[in-house]
Image (tube, rainbow, N blue to C red; front, side, top):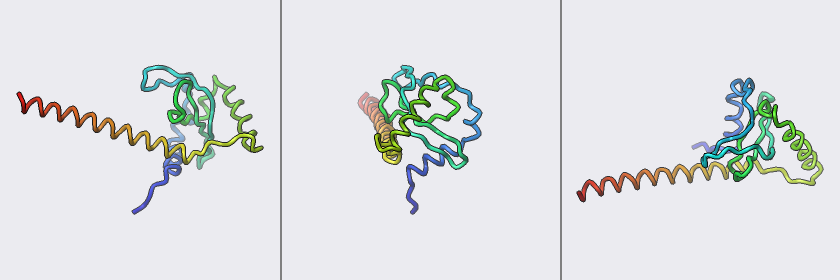
Length: 140
């Protein structure tokens, strides 16, 4: 039985749709989250270069947990050049050992664990509603 590598899965996902995203002119103005609020980009916390040289940036969003960060294409930063400038400074700090880079494998693993827990929570909620419905029918 083959095991799956979360880091490789993320890399494959990012490389799969290069053509779709490389022409994407969508602004990185904000992201809407589950709470219905729109959040501005706070900073870039990691970078990934795909097989075809396409660069993705992991964006941390203001007022969102780091595990809600998302991978964005380099074309998304037209209105946020300061984020890219800050990221270049951070990469130099990391190269000099003054700052520690994000462990992408650990990040991806944590995100997958959260997503699995959320799926389980939704499944249990649906099951609980069905059980209540059946009980209300049986006792009526």
